[in-house]
Length: 71
Image 1 (cartoon, one colour):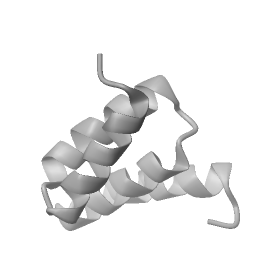
Image 2 (cartoon, helix red, strand yellow):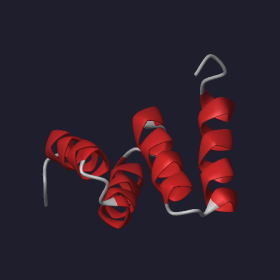
Image 3 (cartoon, helix red, strand yellow):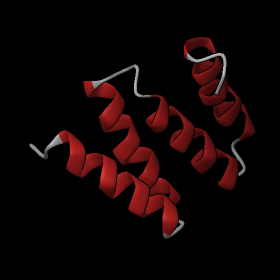
């Protein structure tokens, strides 16, 4: 099992390289370990937006706002 910090870095790298499917997979794994990881929710929302999956993106961003109103 990968370290949590390693998963985060891999998820960020996947987003930077526009590998959106991998970004979703990695961030989902992060959220399985820590459902309150705001960064992972934001990255998933961005990935879904880039893939044109607006409903999924909206849901991810709504979760962010539910947990952090100032985000």
